[in-house]
Image 1: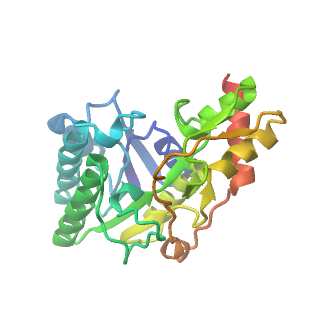
Image 2: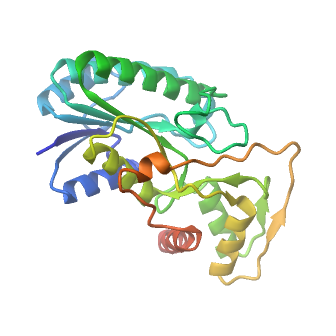
Length: 284
């Protein structure tokens, strides 16, 4: 039986991952604020050593909306996560699964591929994630451990903070307010949080190694997202178009590598928005 220690196990993605792993029969231990300050390396390592996990899932990071891209804490999380991973493999840990980001890639408008798209992150967040991937890869090679890295694209779903794009559009539609869009024609790879979680479980269960895009492989415009929300909330509110110049690049994933593990997305645009809308109705 795998014995997982999950950082960020109470978070937006982590809580879903923990439930899925437990349902699969694995032993799951979460480490969060109530257990230790993860940026306090000795305290976090102490929790790790007491838990004696065989597998480590690294999901905790700085995520405050509007801040995390340039947050100085990205470097703190990089250092602390490296230290925890090193303690894990030195103690005989078998496998690490880490959460990366599409922000590690150069956003040049082409479909992001793990083996082809340059890693040219444009933000401190992306640079810290790319540095952690490189560090974990070297560490696991040196210690004969497995390392799988999931680059998450644009995750959404129940539990997503209200200031973010999709919940803010849903709230506007439910309130009868205009759906104001800064980049209506920008196309992004939106992926439901449940699908992200199942992809992380696939990485942990399939002896995966290396980097994988955690996405749908489908690009959807922000305009289409807003139009779907307006249609499903049965309001007369239509998305307002507000162009910016120049628009940011489209960001879409190639997911062939992930699908080769037997994974597929359960949600499309319609079912994903329906789930997100139902959750917002309940939480309001």
